[in-house]
Image (spheres, rainbow, N blue to C red):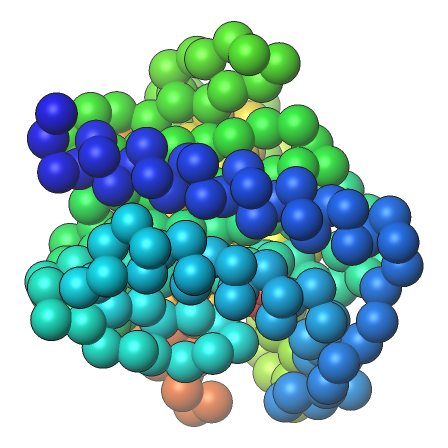
Length: 266
Ligand code: LIP
């Protein structure tokens, strides 16, 4: 078994266990532990508990690896492998009782950002949707639903216009600019979705449910697993230079659509 496949299988096992814990905590009721960059930017007790579980499982299986997690920061390891973890991506959906949230776990090497690392494996587990998306570098992407595993491929054509998704960060100062970006992209869109979890947006692009996705200001843990899942589904993910607020633009879709969106948002 290759290292990539081994890491994917481990990420899958951990993401399913972590997702079950998050799902159970959701049913018991959500407690907001902290507000981060703004009132809208929340951390639940479950985010912290789930990240601890993921860190424990990684440490038990691969004690030499490093971990970069949304809630706990970076713990460096002695191996070349870094795990990039969002325990609950789509926290606001989770807190509000909406199903589009996921546990996102990736194993990367060579850096701590999408432009610097090579992703080896990635898994997005969306417990409330009953779906597990997984990829290993060079092995393609799959989704598992109700025990059935299917290969993923991004949508190649969108004759009715591209079904796109985007997101708006938590900083109210950036909203006007993000709405202007949507206005610019609208001429090629069939419609636009705001799903609320970047990892799920990326998984949907890989599955061809969405044609494309663009958002400014994503963090490494939002994109690590999902970007590999898109690339291994024959799609492309590109980053554009940061705006005045320091937010990098991430664009995903077929290579042609990524070019089109990049030309519009600049
Ligand atoms: C969130 C994303 C959401 C994006 C937010 C944030 P969190 O992650 O997935 O779609 O718009 O900026 O990054 O905070 O729920 O893990």
